[in-house]
Length: 83
Image (tube, rainbow, N blue to C red; front, side):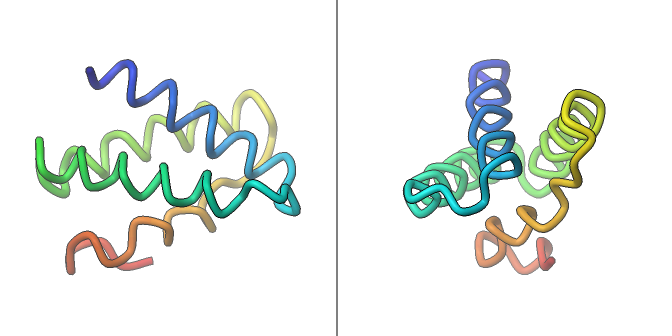
């Protein structure tokens, strides 16, 4: 399941990084938040950290873009995640 979520999360954040003015950005953000909640419920903040680290590295490598501003989309899931 984690591999599926990682691929979906990668696709959503990569699309957002490449086109931040996308009219569907709100629905992408909502799905990213759902994935964050699923990860937190399954493995806590450590699962969130590990997944985002993986996504961050892939996006930086493949698109030469910084996905760090999108970390804030998971704010509010847990007090331990605050960006």
